Amino acid sequence: MLLAEDHSDLRALLVITLDRGGFDVFQFEDGQAALDAISEVRPEALITDLTMPRLDGFALISASRRLPGYERLPTLVFTALDASDPRVKELKELPRLTVMQKPPSWRDLVPELERLIES
Image (cartoon, rainbow, N blue to C red; front, side):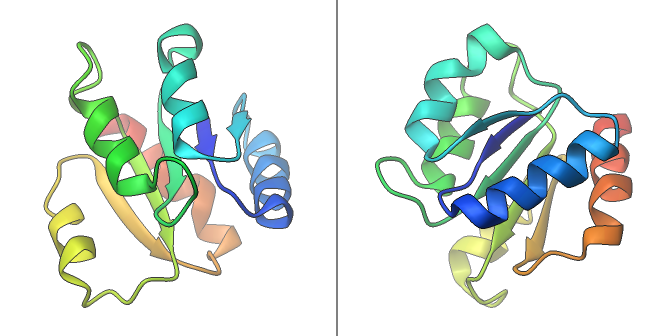
């Protein structure tokens, strides 16, 4: 599991929740660090925030899905952006991608991620 989230407290809670759900988590504080590690980590899924320094989540999703073998990488997006934002609406059209508003529903996180991976 590749996790890109710039807020350390939220990132720590996500790691705990995902670890308890049985996922191995590789965590990064920005999209560029996550993208740089993707070929080495070979994640089964990506969890990302949309607003981060260096490389935001929009660019991370776009760049990762251009990589061979990652065109349909299961992706879970966390965002505080309004669901009516045109950029968020556009993301929702991508295959194998789910958008969850911050703060996340902790009890729904692992089942939603498992659903994405299995789809």
